[in-house]
Length: 568
Image (cartoon, rainbow, N blue to C red):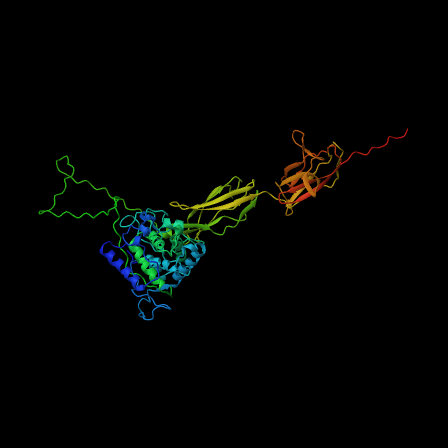
């Protein structure tokens, strides 16, 4: 197993020796940190304040192994501290790579702004980062703070570690069978799914990025209203990360050491730890550790094999063992879908019957954050607007290109206005989905006019003789299928529906003074017959289109002039 893989401390003499060394380091440093609480002083399964810790997979790291190196017994010098410290002792260990140090301090500032009561010190993040990943392997990170390759703990398969079956389809840890701790702060995938952060503003929550991981660790440590300036709360926070008192003492020793002073060193030049911890055997359901059975001593003359089932001829035969099927290979992170993200799709809006200007586009990335090519991505339209992809399909599948992008065909808006969604789905083991909101708006007109200019006059109680025809246009072209509202009013400046004067009629012959109409394929609108009641006067017909175009037509109701009979 590579040197960066950490294992848990051995019990017994090793535990006692390391704990003693940690106490000595703390005593020698005279650190100002809060002391260990009494409840955290003994036993792997006892938390601060006498609390009993939960199952192993409740810890952020799944109780994965860690580095056990302890800081020097003399603390680094700093302004105001003793000037008699040896010049070289501890100076290298006090150095923290620049990007890693910046991430810890940024996390402290961010948490201070959102949860000031927690009082998170960046030195605590540095202490955890030291024992979890050796400050991300000595600061080997790129300009964005991401490690060049994932930092992975061992498979949590119950063989000396907690048993945690896969929760992410291998997206983060490349293991589709069991979970592994991942990244600079060694989160298991299920914990990262809850606590993952995007601290560097790249739109991704990446456990392999020191900025994202440090902020996630800070928020995780502050959970439950903890005040990390209180010893008991700090102990509980660290034990929630890894439920081992030896782990707590190791973190505490580095925390006190870094509080005495640190300095920045170039990325990639940090001191790498050398002492991984060793796993303890997994506990049995009864709470005790299963001993490894010792082989029985051989009798003089050798051992006697157990008889097998009798053969028909009187002999015996040993049962043929069933072959163990080979384990399914775990796909490497480069072949595992990690995320599906928007590849620049803008607002999805079109008028009924039109074509959407924007096309839905996504980008697929693998577990390492690199683009994934030749990945099938399925796009599905859901809604009642009648919108379909070009070709009349509601569902299409597209292969991603070399840059990881997959773009759906153009969308054709249906005839009904309203909202709908387009969903992109990729992956099989743990599918990733991305949903886009879209809408179809009613057809619009920016102008509506009468097709003639005849005066509209009727006698009381009579029908207006001339029919009214209008044409709606949008940007100079005929606007077909546009909704138009016709309202009869007494005064266009006060467009409340009138209760007298001209009117339309419904199917039962009753007066109607408001109608909802629609232009035809040529943008024309022919109004139903208009009738006058017994109230003479001047009235107005107001027509308004979807889109805000308006026209006002004057209607006159007057009695015919009486003519004198000719003289005899």
